[in-house]
Image (tube, rainbow, N blue to C red):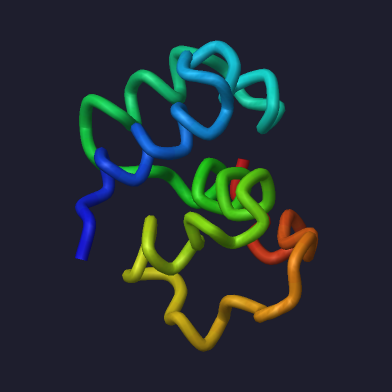
Amino acid sequence: MVMGSNLIERAIELAGGSEAKLASKTGLSQPLINKAKKSGRAGPKLALAIDDFTKGEISKSALRPDLWTPADNPSSEGTNTSHEVGVA
């Protein structure tokens, strides 16, 4: 299994290679992306945003297995999962 920081780094690569680009594509802030990359742990909002941006290639359950199981990941692409957690 790939650790959280590696998954976040992969999301950064997919976004174009910078934290700022991933922030722009997910609607989140660059400092939040940086904090998650350094800590190796994505918050629920970031996990959902990365799952949505990557169309499940980097799943929310891979980023946060304590919150979601692989069964929670829909097999269809482009599913908007932003409604699943009411955490800011």
